[in-house]
Length: 500
Ligand code: ARG
Image (cartoon, rainbow, N blue to C red; front, side):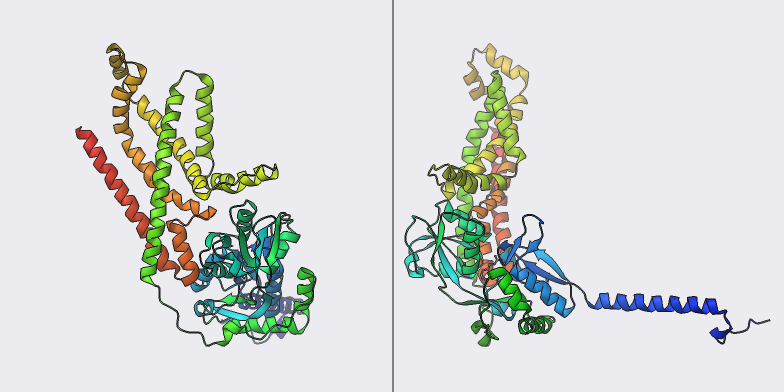
């Protein structure tokens, strides 16, 4: 007998009916909640959190905060999208937007015509301008014109950097963040920093950066916009929410919280947004080649100097490791372990930024030249690595060779010079080549102290042309050319010594 079809729930006992109804409601609510969550996908927003009071990492909580951060979170809330923060360097923001690895970026970014060709901007949300910062007691500079021929420190890829690069004869050094540029100025290695007024004011007043002052203010008028990829689907939502926040007073409230002043009236569009954006200028290949060549020569110079000093130091250390004097032996060991066991990046910062800051705080006037700092840090490292290589080379020479040299009546120095060293050197040639190739690549770290070596030359070109892929590939190829040439030369040397 076929089961009776279930025609109506009315046949079910009342309690079951109630339970079923509750289950269906719960499912419906869950599904509704789920579809709501799915529609409000988070917006991934890039920011360079080294620019207080706009974006910075709160020292206590470790969270990213600032005016831009609060504003963007309010915009996200208004639009119904949670914000997922993606910290990255300022000069990486536009390439990241182009690659669409973030949905937007907020980073006190000035709306410029040049940038507006590579990315899209929201309506302006802040009015700022450039300022010149100098050291108390340093040269008097009030206008951009007076910066002619001076040493200027800037953050790479910023409008301050663009301003500085247009000053005739100025020697511009670029850093990954504005605090580092200010440190460069404080340490006496630059005459001025060009950057945005609000950020500078904050650094001097709030962060208590002593010894620096603003000497020229609002040299330009700039409007910040939220940056988005070209043809971004979320641009309308961002603009609508921003307008709503301006209209309902939320924006003014935030502004007062962060700047203790009433906000100015902002234009609907920044001047740079009004002109129809022109075609994006192609990459000037000749300029790229010239700049990369310049960078490569600096890289080679750094490598050659550091390897020579490192080889000398490494030999000295290897010899010291053999000495019977305990404290010399242990001194060398500690040296080697320290320099091999700490990142070269940290050592570079210590030598270039840390040392002068420390000595100056003790009223010792001390500045260190960029080249000296870079070569010192690199050589100290090479020496530490080579010491071990050379030591193992020396120790690998058969006991019989030492005894034979002694039997011939050679002095310890002659024994080293004529018997041990030539054989040991032949053995350590391959690891020596390794170290040399590593060094070629490691010189790129000198970029952090404002050195315009090969990598930084590429980075500088990306910061003005926004062609990250092509330029970094070109940079990589130049490094490859240098490392393969070096390895070929070492191979040759090895072959020749094998025969000799
Ligand atoms: N307004 C300047 C610019 O657009 C500087 C912005 C720097 N922002 C930052 N988060 N570091 O170039």
